[in-house]
Amino acid sequence: MSLFFEGAEKKLEVVVSETGPNLRHLGMDFWQALVASADADILSQVSNDYLDSYILSESSLFVWDNKLVMLTCGGTRLVDALLHFIQCIGVDVISFVSFQRKNEFIAALQPSTFAEDIALIRQHITGKAYRIGHLDSHHHYLFHSPKPYPKAQKEITCELLMYHISGDIADYLRSEAQEAAVIRQKLQLSTLFADFILDDHLFSPFGYSVNGIKDDKYFTIHISPQEQSAYVSIETNLDLAHYRVPVFANLLARLKPSSWDIIGFNLAHEEKEFHAHLCLGSCSITTSLGYNIHFSHYQQSCKEVLIPEFM
Amino acid sequence: MSLFFEGAEKKLEVVVSETGPNLRHLGMDFWQALVASADADILSQVSNDYLDSYILSESSLFVWDNKLVMLTCGGTRLVDALLHFIQCIGVDVISFVSFQRKNEFIAALQPSTFAEDIALIRQHITGKAYRIGHLDSHHHYLFHSPKPYPKAQKEITCELLMYHISGDIADYLRSEAQEAAVIRQKLQLSTLFADFILDDHLFSPFGYSVNGIKDDKYFTIHISPQEQSAYVSIETNLDLAHYRVPVFANLLARLKPSSWDIIGFNLAHEEKEFHAHLCLGSCSITTSLGYNIHFSHYQQSCKEVLIPEFM
Image 1 (cartoon, one colour):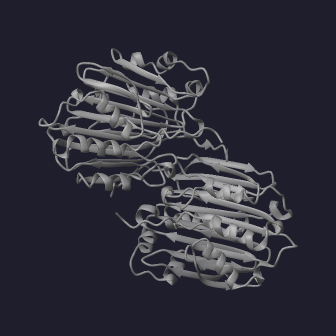
Image 2 (cartoon, helix red, strand yellow; image 1 turned 90 degrees about the vertical axis):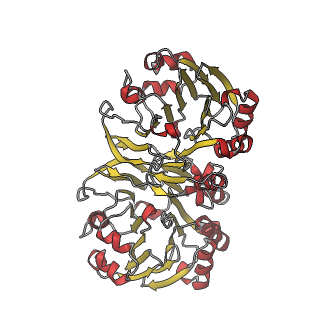
Image 3 (tube, chains in turn red, blue; image 1 turned 90 degrees about the horizontal axis):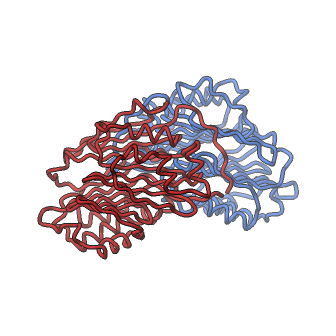
């Protein structure tokens, strides 16, 4: 049986009100304890005037004055980081929480289900939760707090999740002698994200994470190339609909996934530069907070010859 | 949150050698204990000169003189029925075992994983195991014992698994006042399976199982129409490639699933009468025992508008 790693991420976003603390002043010990509560570690950190970016042993953390975005993969317990945060900061200064989970490759190996996670969150914060997508296909779970907050309708986030990558770059990512600089070059990060401060990490035996920041913008890419569960995600708060490069089409062309998902918040997303595909399902909803959530699941348009995996 | 029921079945097939007992002589107490060991019950039984057919609280059991086929859905532990059978009969008179699991809608709710199941089986019987299909899409797990037995290359089985049924018949199956006779008529069972002895059961609040037998042939249909996990399976040892009616195309046209799988053993399967579809992935392998296994995953060819499921 080939190596397995659960690349699919859980994602937490928290916004604190003006009466709350400046999150960037809470100090490294605070963030180390928060990350540890999710069963992950901080590996490195870069900062600019707007935000601090952390590479974690399982994905990434971004901290602005009044907001945090945390993604963790593997068997982490991200919900525990939220509970830890609420315990330290108090629930009253929290303006907004969203908690998401993408369906995992092997859900049975996770320490909790999304339903169990939101039962814990709802002991502190009421909120709406839904699943988008069928249980037997790619699907996405989302919880958000009920109170509208002023910026909710303007903030943009988008995610591209790619499954079963193939081709030269995929082969390189699964090879034994990789270098971070070569991965950056193969993904053309300096073209796609010119002038971003980059912080990256190569895992053993493989796996690659990179955070990039520029002003108040971030992107993060996580690569788990293991054959039977190959997964690459990118997430950013850039407005890709009005960006100078078609970032998602570019990455799809390089990484050649057999299927992929796009999840967007307030993003007018664009698929016309994607390679040949079929959109199997799509959902666009406007939440009670006034922002829009979009989910689409895509599949390459050719039939795949499946290879049995011996167990 | 709408009702959830795990329709996806586990399947066990065991063949005993000429030195073993006649399975049909083992008596009702034996089969009741075997079924109970998997955490299910026998609801009814019909027989002919060749085999005994049992409707279970979770799916079905068929018993011939030297063979059993057992399917169980929900949260049953079918592997425990195999361990019970080995304990009662002894491993030496077993000529052949195959144990299969279709990926479940919510794998995390299952009492065991396939990997855990085959670790238990391998304490008694060595054998090959594989997964066909990606972990994040429809996939199928199969274990089989290593010894060839004479009839392996001739026996045919085929399964059609339908997901997210829609249309008039699906609506009826989810309605409150169903009747078994009406379901039989809507599925045209008397046309598709003329001269079969039928035994069926209507579950509450919904759900329907039917077994049919004729000579040494059987078919079994299980319907779990619950909205978010709607699933209908049919399995038979009829040679559908040389049958007078295109059974699978007929059921697909009536039940209008958004996706479906076909799993065949030694079956030249035929998809030309299916409604518009895309075959997303396919695998055909010949095992070391000389028989052929085929798996194909299909999707309707139109894009689906996904409806969020509140939690």
